[in-house]
Length: 78
Image 1 (cartoon, one colour):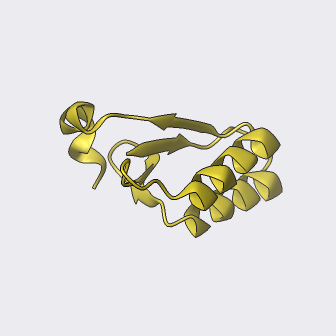
Image 2 (image 1 turned 120 degrees about the vertical axis):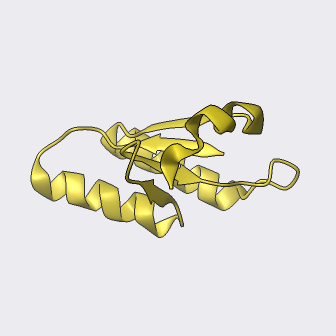
């Protein structure tokens, strides 16, 4: 699971960042106020991961990998 948090910035750039993250297929967690993206670690979607890190470089977006065991504590994202 990837957890994505948007960087704070002026409105037009914030919206660009949000739309770019949304286009990766990430889901918004209304309780946690974060984006989540389930990935298969046995066959990771390299293009999607590269896209997220490009977004991170451009906007300062925070992207982290969370092991599935940890997700039980964060599973309130739906």
